[in-house]
Amino acid sequence: TYHVLREVEQSSPAEKGGMKDGEILLEVNGESVESLKHEEIVDRVRLSGKKVSLTSITPSGLDFYTKLGLSPLLFCEDDAADKETENNKPTSAKVQESKASCVPRVSAVSATTDATNGEEEDGYEISVL
Image (tube, rainbow, N blue to C red; front, side, top):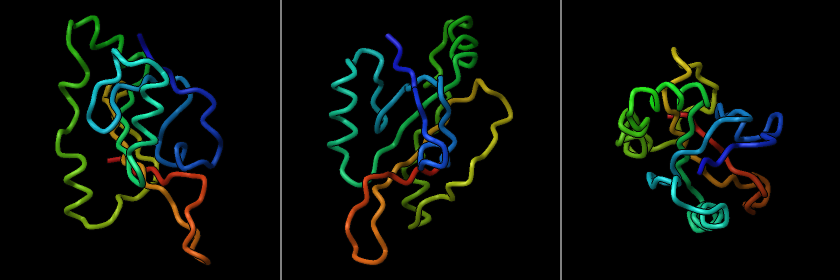
């Protein structure tokens, strides 16, 4: 079962993080979502609190790995979360073009807060790692 990203809103944190409509979600917080139901994925994202890591890939990228008989997760950086911790700040949310559409993309997502009153907004800040 594949979980496809749909209706990625323009100028949203997801779009700014490089996620695109039609990409396939591979992992939430380093855990494969292949055997999970939609509701289980939503629960994992909600239970992540203020930060969540998402890994997605284009359909053509997934097809590439499938034809080779490999999992695209073999080529993800296991230390993506550590990179952000080492920097002690989120990586820039600037969209980074990958050299090939078959490279899985890991994004760190942080809940954003309103600078004026410190309250949590309804969105997430996504950083491509």
